[in-house]
Length: 285
Image 1 (cartoon, rainbow, N blue to C red):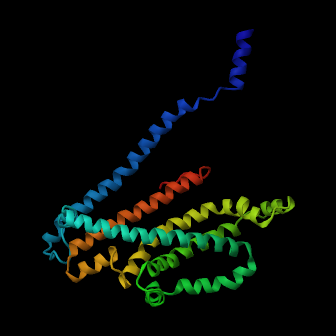
Image 2: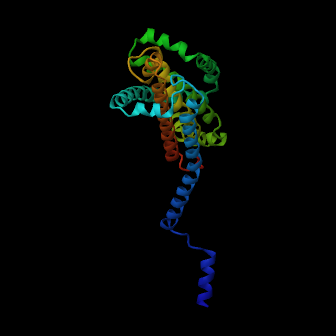
Image 3: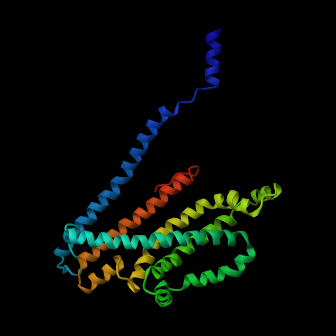
């Protein structure tokens, strides 16, 4: 009799496996998933690099038009080239990160304001659209005239480029907040600061991180555009110098560095999103 009742209790209330027992299986599954998803991109990369290495000479393309991949790799083999690329990369990354930080903060605050207030949205959003429609290359010379040739105009170009994605996504996230949740906060007499910090901002985090992923890539674009207009150092200046000397291999080397930095920016935002939105569904990033 005792054995039967014990069996019934066990089947009615099964004991959940411990976290230590589940963790290895999750880890192994994650490793298998990573391996399966990394094979095809790596194979594609090998094919592209092989075509890049052997196809241009086979077609008789001059090296100053499309250099071989090995010629681009040679740019990373001398200490002089590596130190120059590293120094200019740091300048561009610093401009991009500083502008991204300022532009994202402004975009999130303004997005909360415009998303929470229909009056402010009707007043200011058309002018924000008009500002975003202006070519940033046309704005850059004005910033140089107004603020000189230092760091400020370059950071401002990045701010202008990164502000809009955060503004639109934050505003969209605020406007999509459940009205019942707003009513609940009003019913408990929550003030505006509490509504922002406890409801609107947390509910908008998925949209904010989506905009931040776009802004992180645009920040590099803004830094390069600003360096094209006026700068003494940076990857944009290095690209212009290599263009003047018809150093196509060096230009490709800089483009590879920019691609790697852009991917790192994107992965950093994706990592922060996973840490902040731990309750959300996982993505492939």
